[in-house]
Length: 333
Image (cartoon, rainbow, N blue to C red; front, side, top):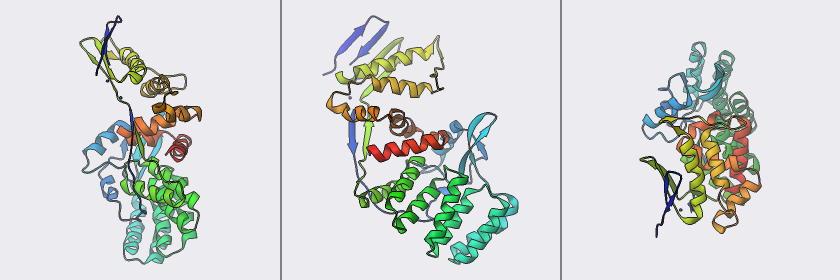
């Protein structure tokens, strides 16, 4: 039964829950040519920021995935998400390579991709496709070299991590396969095939993926100058902290920006403080307590909360943070 509590801070608090929901999957990855997002990426502009990208992703049909060919670069001091278009001088060799690959003439494809790479060395998809051509002819060592090259050129190339994971599995390096498939999943968390492949790799490694979801059963809203919290009793403290940030970010009818000592966003700070307000001694918050103690609270928030609604924001976090998030997923899922 809901309770109504009125606090004398010109805010009314109504009392409402967190669940860990589980589901399972399994399977292996498919190679180049399967991902329909390749064609969708062509419609993207060459220079879009994260906010624009989120809107365009939403507008695309069935677009719950990050399209390939995306990379991150500095632009006037701001990290921006860009979509790579192959250099004009490399286009002829690229088209020749793609045709040869589709006809399974892998040696011809390799030669043409290498030619294209000399003309556009920053296009990571060329190296990814090179690796795929070596994979197609059964040369796993060659495939590994070029998938790793693609990643070194563009760390957020999720396909390169995905295909490298398949290659490492074929080479018998299951630990490495799990690592790379986890990175592919973190970079493109809504990609169903990658998720299934990660489940399969983890199953084969003897560590089945624990697919739980963090669902705070607490809602904080503002109505007629009053802040309303709907929450179960154990979540009231979580809601109270969120209500404080809500009141601080809406002053005089306009939004206020809040950043932490390291430049953290308002949303990240809000989530950190809200989750820290939970009583981790209670059974339902025991896992959160372990995550905090292990030093992975920020990674938990990015993976479980912030990038669930906007997965494209994962791309601008940088390699170090993305690897930390992958470590978090490996440890707690």
